[in-house]
Amino acid sequence: MSPAAVRRVVAERAANADPLAAGFTGHSLRVGAAQDLLAAGVDLAGLMQAGRWKSPQMPARYTERLRATRGAVAQVRRARGAADT
Image 1 (cartoon, rainbow, N blue to C red):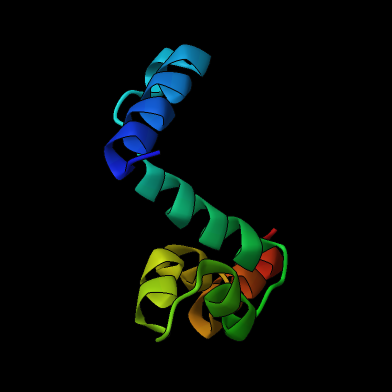
Image 2: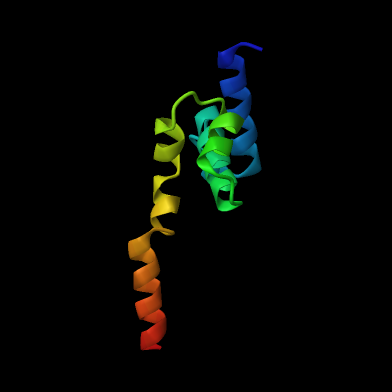
């Protein structure tokens, strides 16, 4: 299949599955896979291997929001919030 055909199939299948998925692309699958792998505990090296990335920039970018929820500041805020309840 050509790249254009793959894009068309992904967009059509996503829209058929959920009308709110309009605009869903093959790139969305790549970003979502990186986020899902990180959420499952896969480290950066594993993400890079799974996505065939040669450098850490893109998987790091794709997962930056999820990683921020796990960072030091987020941990402190959660601990303070739990202490207030």
